Image 1 (cartoon, helix red, strand yellow):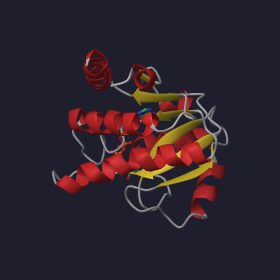
Image 2 (cartoon, protein in one colour):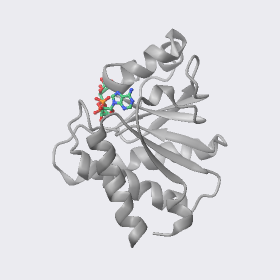
Image 3 (spheres, helix red, strand yellow):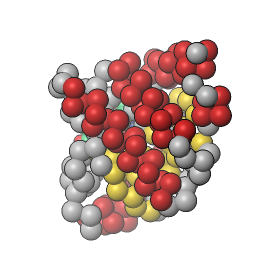
Image 4 (cartoon, helix red, strand yellow):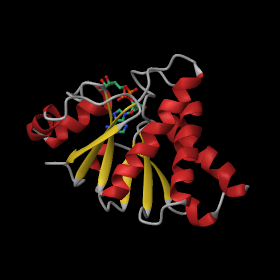
Length: 176
Ligand code: AR6
């Protein structure tokens, strides 16, 4: 993978709601009306105005993305994407890849230069982290190859274990 692409990817352990990137991505559900996991944490930190704006959207299909303001979050925007519920079928990976590609496209359309992703689908939706990590990073690299506007993509992992999975995979791309 080209160095100028890899150099725009960063991997961190922590709480995505604390990130001051231009946008953070939410692992939402089709209703966009909030839930548990990272979705619950983002709504709690953003405040009730986020839910009010989400209510105007009428939901979001799996694999697609929608943008709102970030309200009380350090990030200016939240990009809500809906990952697949893992079933072990080929369409899972297509839908998960679309989550990353569509979120990055919306970011680019809004002139966003830094964006942070959680491990979409890897909690309640059951996607194995090692498979999801490859899809997340490969899809992001494919997008960044053809886009110069987005300067930084940060993958924020809650657990040290998940963080190591991402770091190890990125290292294999850096070496190749
Ligand atoms: N910062 C970063 N990562 C986090 C945080 C946080 N604050 N909190 C959790 N994670 P999940 P999904 C990690 O379940 O699998 C919701 O109810 C978590 O450890 O949040 O896409 C929605 O409303 C895991 O690795 O999202 C949907 O109904 C990852 O974020 C459903 O869950 C994603 O876990 C979506 O399920």
